[in-house]
Amino acid sequence: MTSKPYLTGHYAPVADEITAVDLTVEGTLPPELTGRLIRNGHNPKPGVTPAHWFKGSGMVHGVRLRDGRAEWYRNRWVHTPALDGAPYLTEQGPDLTASAAGTHVIEHGGRLLALCEANLPFELTPDLETVGAYDFGGRLRTAMTAHPKEDPATGELHFFGSSPFPPFLVYHVADAKGELVHTAEIPGATASLKHDFAITRRHVVFVEGNVTFDPEEHSGIPYGWSDDQPSRIGVMPRGSDGARHIRWFSIEPGNMLHVGNAYEDGQGRIVLEGPTVDREGFQLSWNWWVGAPGRGTEPNTRSYTRSWVIDLVAGTVDEQIIDDLAVEFPTLNEKYLGAENRYGYAVSFPDQEGFGGYGVVKYDRTTGARRIHHVGDARLPSEAVFVPAAGATNEDDGYLLTVISDLKQDASQLLVLDAAGLERVATVHLPRRVTAGIHGSWVSDS
Ligand SMILES: [Fe+2]
Image (tube, rainbow, N blue to C red; front, side):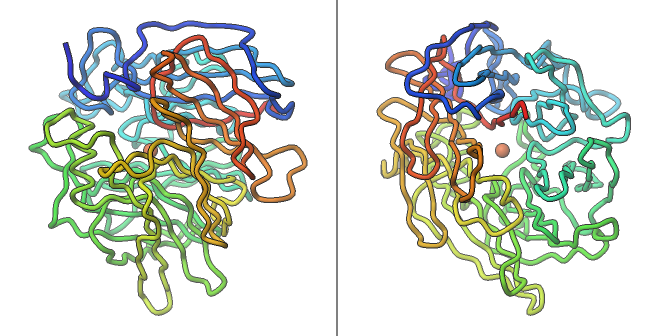
């Protein structure tokens, strides 16, 4: 028996891989939703109890939509050596192929990649079968973040590899076809945990928080909060010579897990936003992630959005907490990635006082308005993925796709919301409950 919170309730793993076809649709699926929604998450094999949520083997769940129909659902483990028990640390050092591969899944250059930040990506087929570890034709010699950024203007994929050991941070760029064309070590980086980062139209932005390498942590993820670890933002120009021009700016203590967006404002300052935890919030989440006493009721119970405005000329950073709703999984219309976005989306979590609850949140950054689509009792939405509507003219012309874990019905649905008003457009009934998980992507046929 286990009381690990990440193996129970919404997070209880499923025991097998299945395929189901011709799914029931309520409402009308817009025909431009022709492609696959793929979501990754941790789903250890039956009988396996990982010591940390993030060590659970990755499983991808896919829903295939085409011309108003939901053609199939399938779920597949990412078949890595770690799924069969291969250790990450070997006598030769880390095995970058021994991946949980359970954090994110993206498509770039025609390749579908399951990601986990300590490892190489794992390539999947369109039907979610595992091809194997992918190292960009031998060019990628570091791990790959689970949060690469595809530049909507150039199609380039910007990413990094981080490690608790030198070189702590290595920046990479793959071109639109998927060729790795640039790699640079980043001067001044430390062992601070770097889960996400940002690109703007002209800069690359790294964030180092107070969570850093802790060799005493034995959950399999050797990190912990340290008051001695400086919190900093690193800003460097994009381009092949950018790394040697990086500048590091001190910020308040915290740990930002995910970036909402970053951009240059009208005055050339860099604006960065993302849900961030303080020391106590980190400890509540971490204790949940490892199933320790003193955990929050859910992860992210004290994750509040902060903004940083970095004035590169004056050398200053203005930092503020800008929302009182506990949220995570920020998303946006990715056409606006790196540029000023009016709208942002997130998943709200119940905080320690029970405020908020699960919902899909929309922010209007111009008016300051916040709207929540409450998903109902005992229902948990996954990251809301934005898909533009056909012929979209406004930034929020599109749909939000989220997979609901429904404990009362022991079932799941793919919920399609209108991104403008957050009304439900369609519901696709899935053949079983989908384990609540981490990140996902829409992979359009076009
Ligand atoms: Fe993430």
